[in-house]
Length: 216
Image (spheres, rainbow, N blue to C red):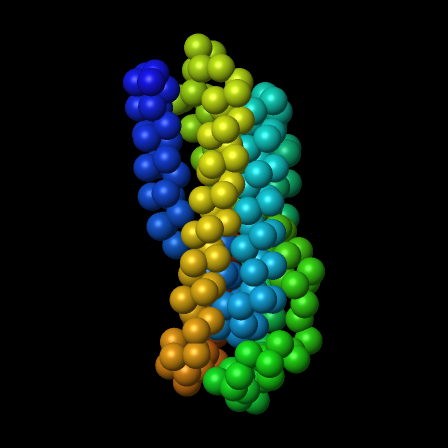
């Protein structure tokens, strides 16, 4: 066993998992979807977020990530687009009426009759992940600081696949936990207020991102 590569893997894996534990807009969306839409449809959000992460990992692997990060115009545009998207999600959450939450405690069959679909949730998750500049900068820092030129490309690809799977499995575990009947019944009583709180959080994050991009 190559202990140097093993130590790099452990370092990156721990840093990556700790980053997942830090609540951000992606995590908020996963929780929100799991509570409101049930397991099958909310899995779309998890798949979308994981795909967005995979895109940034791939860009970093082929060297495009550093070019994107070094371009002020691209980073500003990415931040503004991401911030506006989060503000849009916040408006949707804050404008929802209390009657929209009355069936959340019902069975999964009734929940799956809601208007959203797996594809819609996938797009929401992907847009959230791809328009979050922190994702690009996080993976770029890992691949440039930890993974030096001495590390072979195959190892980097394997690590990229590992990180993508960890993102997917982590979000799926959160969805599974929050989609169980027992947990859902508890959350259903507070879902309306929880959605309003997440709307405020997403709105504040979006506003902060836009402000930081436009005001230097």
